[in-house]
Length: 257
Image (tube, rainbow, N blue to C red; front, side, top):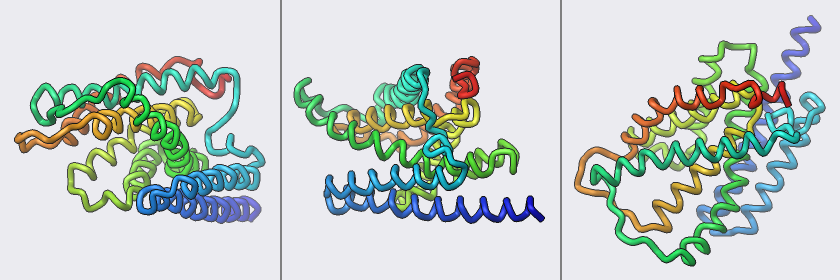
């Protein structure tokens, strides 16, 4: 009975955590996407991380570490590897799309414009990348790890990540496919390293690269009927063995930190 009681308490805690963080995350997204309110975005992002810390203390007294953000001297290594993997993940399909004429570069601004246009986004998306990782991966992993199989946990997290993009679900099957595969890619480092630093850094670097190459640099779709999203999806499947190889070393595990 005590075990069942503990499971019920944990289920209640994680449910309230997920709902609260979900609302705070999407309030921040609403502020920046529909109101263009930068202050509102950062207010709700700050509240998100504060709530995540408080819920982590409530769940197992570990604060943000509860959801995979453990602070230690080896964080930098995870972050640098994550940035490298994130750039590799996004740069290869972009290059292939350009080479095949699926996308065409129309204009590249000068370096000054490139930097000034990219830095504010890179700073803001740092918060939204890690907050989404806590919501769709950290919370899911903390509760379901050892309760369900690893493949089931990966599919569940990827599905939640897909559904979290509530404004993109009507964009077509190619968008659905790449978002789901991206969810698989991003949960793998957490499963292998038991921390979110590598995943969050991948996520941030990828988002920043995509913004620079598709918003700051002017791109237009070519006449090829094959969507660039399908190129991305194919590359993600091929990328999984590379990802597993890179993160196989023991020093990336939080257990070694």
